Image (cartoon, rainbow, N blue to C red; front, top):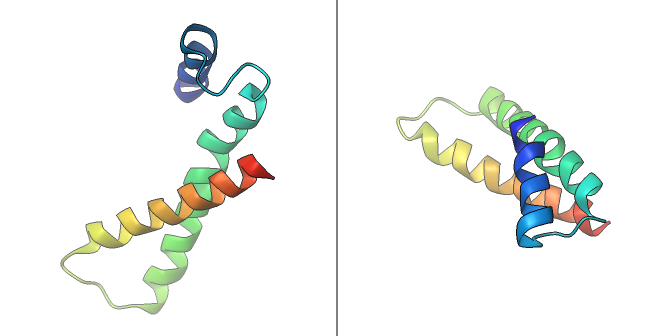
Length: 75
């Protein structure tokens, strides 16, 4: 909900993304990005052993989720 409100404010006041892309942005940012990132992280964490720098793994999975969300935006 908070992400959707932020996207509406960005679309109307700042012209970022535009009003026509608002539906796609409201789907990609709060739905595609976190679920894809979490799915990739879970798949990798089951097959690899725990490391002390687990934050770098989660950050790189977030980048993968962002890449997939950008692909869905373009699609």
